[in-house]
Image (cartoon, rainbow, N blue to C red; front, top):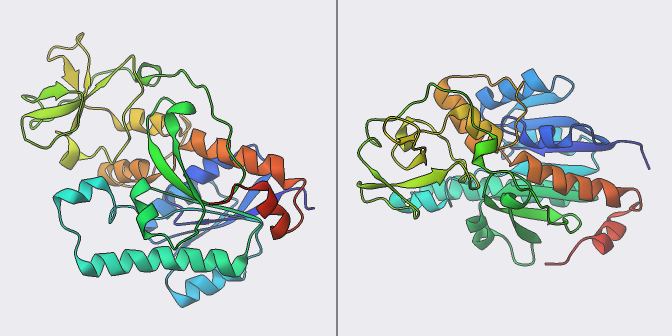
Length: 301
């Protein structure tokens, strides 16, 4: 067995999986994403990795991926087309076909490379789009971080021991000053998400943080942090706090406009949860020499 697992990161985004792999015997040799801005962030923070701006559905890009030897395949498939929030805006068939093709391409890469272990992250709603018998688990990041975030983790990897993280949103707050958007100022904070134009989802300092989305201006009315010490008793969540909830280190440098940065943070894999998955993979990797042996170490669908 080689001393270090070679990994490929598909739809890599800003580098959440790469952060989760830091300090582990995992070398991400290739990272690919369609969005050049996210690739810029990845390259800034992980200079040892070859980062390619490309579409995994493109034959040329796929050829380069398939020619790269790897033991571990990671990724985060775009989720907007199946997200709960898209229930407000009907997804056009053209977009559905495009994103299904991305999922199909990722699964085809997995099949052709046949790595010992693989894991692709997405929203739970992706499960209905998966081919029958595709292995997956639903994990909530509240067990490993200060954020409550349910996601589907698709692939072949060992069972992940549940964490016991007690951190809350109060553990990631940054010093003020803070903001409150004009659409949120008059809305009443409530404990359930709704879209009636009069209420907003409340987040509290002494509880787990909410699922981090893109935190940009078009979502400024959907979520507020309740803090009675402030003049209006509430405020927006700052992008730095969203990055901390996602597990990004404090010295991480994001490339792009404020909207680009917010989108990169919201799309990333939750790093502490990803770390727990990678630790389980590394623990099993030493006793695994073939794909068949990897299958024996991983739960069946």
